[in-house]
Structures are given as C-alpha cells and as structure tokens.
Length: 101
Image (tube, rainbow, N blue to C red; front, side, top):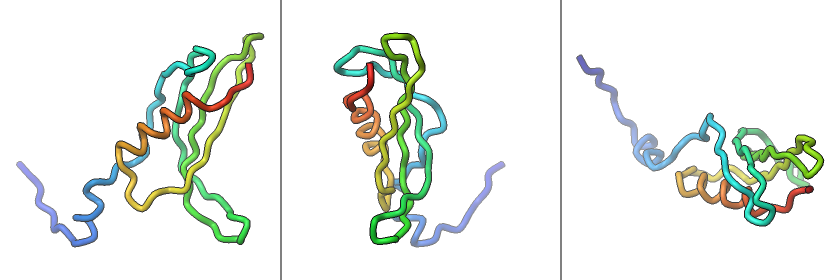
C-alpha cells in the first residue's frame, strides 16, 4: 500500500531543508577536552529594532572543574532553508565556544 500526495511548488524549494534534530549530540570541547552534550531549540529573538525573528538556540551542557553542571547557549537567526550543513556548523561552533572551567 502507498499513499500519494500532491506536490506544491513551495514544497519543491523546501526539499533541501531539514528540521532541527530532536536528539542530543555528544562532542568534546576543542580547548578544554571536556565532554559536551549539545541540543537545539527553536525560539524567537527580539532585535534592537523591535523586530521579532525566528531563531535557533544551541545549548551546550558540561561540567566545570568543580563538577558543577554548566550550560552555554548560542543563538542564530533561523535561515530560510535550514540544511544539514548548518546543523554541523552549529555543532562545530558549540565545541569551539569559550566555556567556564
């Protein structure tokens, strides 16, 4: 059994887009070599002009030298067509950001 759907022109252009992953990514911080747990959240960001834009928040969870749990957050404007390469770039930037040790 299969299911057929009509394809609209706007769907053709979004075919290269991906949605934000729901899972966490485990990586190592480049400078401190601490383990990081990275995840994504969609949200909104208010610009100084008062304009509200859709944003991507990238959270990194880690432990400092005392063993306390810490979080770092980066935010980016949501691109028109989110692609896998964007996700990989955000993860790489999270592993390179300064963290408290």
